[in-house]
Length: 224
Image (cartoon, rainbow, N blue to C red; front, top):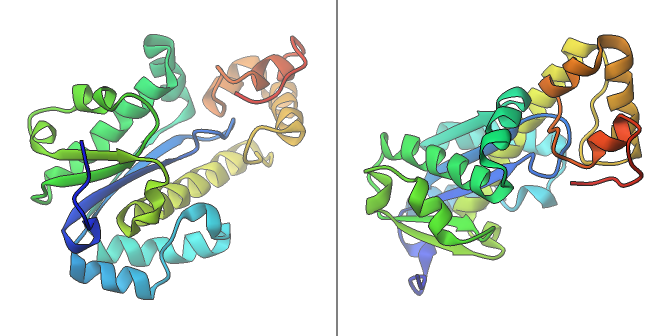
């Protein structure tokens, strides 16, 4: 579907996710409703892609965005994530399911004709996952969607939720669970197994990552 000439001139829903590339912690999808008036406030707040903002600033900005904008946040914890991935066996399909849930939840609160999301796979994946309300919306998927302030706001809410949940998991284990998928992440994974046993790993990590093989000593690659 082609985008209207200027999406910033209309009310729309932005959708984005966080945690997709992080071994530890949840996958979080946020949907945010933005009107042209709200957009002016978001611009004044310097809302932009969360990847360009420090974690500390993200945690400061998120409460203001939540107060300002109708929103929906879907957080899929590691255990549930692993269950869903075992059934779906495809990250893009799992992402589409999460995007559809966040969008449907927000459409219970607001009336909106257009939603914008990052291009991560076949557009039909999200459309097929939508239910009655969602199927009436016009979905625009494009690369670098975070340049739209509605998607940028969603990216901040998703990242803030991810960071808070990752911190909570770290506190529960009394072990720092790093972001990303790196040697430090592998070391933390080994510490989790050493302290709590292998079964505990599925409650804090996304097991389909190749990092799991490293943690278990079964391979020599890192990443997803």
